[in-house]
Image 1 (cartoon, rainbow, N blue to C red):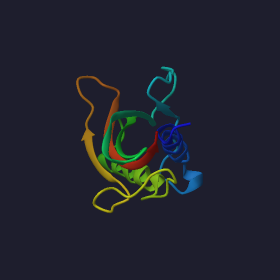
Image 2 (cartoon, rainbow, N blue to C red):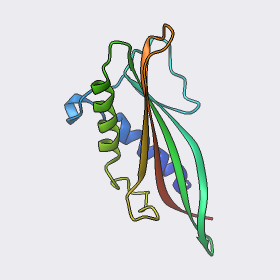
Image 3 (spheres, helix red, strand yellow):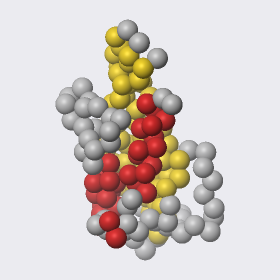
Length: 143
């Protein structure tokens, strides 16, 4: 198994742990990776996880330093406030644990990961409000 697949499994497991029983602010209905089917009957809040890029940064011999950007779209109901979205954003960062994922390495600036978020209100009759968190993790892949 590649480090990329291991890291994705760790990201999914960490995000699936988000629940009030584990000290987070919300209980998620599910975490869905790219290609996994989310049934329409599954109510918000839930997370949709995709990889927007996976770039080669440096290599030595058969080892490569790579930066992968996970895009985590958090979907909450229309009645959710900005503060609800901010709390879930905090939960996502807390779940990924500032370097707690064993397969990730510090990024070039020495941080455990880089992250940015965009908050989107409901629009034109939408029933959901979303936040999209772009999380960059570094890892070493051996070929």
